[in-house]
Image 1 (tube, rainbow, N blue to C red):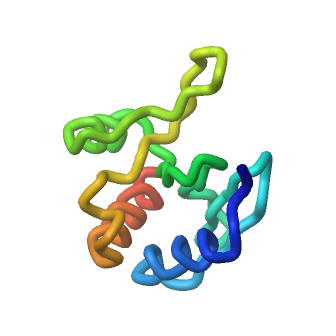
Image 2: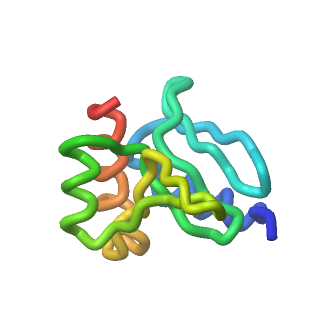
Length: 103
């Protein structure tokens, strides 16, 4: 499955509080940028992940976020956007700004 135009529009609406964002399709998913800095991805399965490590990753984990894992079990420094933020652009924007601040 690859991302649709509707998926892309949803991501842009969800993160509108961040300011202008851009995206690039990759490997069936989407990489999401602010000022040229990648801060999130949309997987081909439709899950949104924020780039995170250290204290920010721990904060996401406390909120129930799950770490992105490759099919072979290798993890990457991306964690799911907390569930509550998926329907709340203000909350999603706050998490996205925290991801950008942590980079």
